[in-house]
Image (tube, rainbow, N blue to C red; front, top):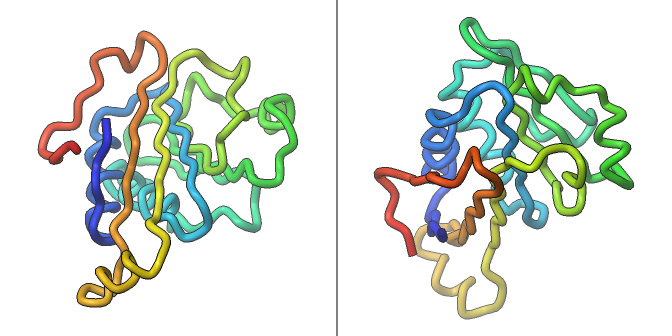
Length: 163
């Protein structure tokens, strides 16, 4: 399924909408270039889950755990500097007892789980898109959401217009 996101606020709302469907053991994999909106998405997800601590770009840490007042913690992972799925596994994350969001997840999930929700965030390029976005100051993003495994077989996104 494909969603067009026109502003940081909408990316935040997308994170919140997906957060409402998450439970312990869920893994969300985010991919997209720098500035695509991965952390903005995760902020919305964290706000909806009412996590403790600000959800920031994980540039300087590999994984940060955000406790919640009620429910499983959110673990926010930056896989950018990891070389293999084994290195992700070496972080000793409690995947079964947490909600895990992995940025730069491409190629990092082999053997970790069969059930995950993948989001590929694409920012437009080229002068035509730049001209089109000057009115609002923000380029729209395309978010391709791909469910993997039995857990996500019935995934739907109520309230969002799908492309």
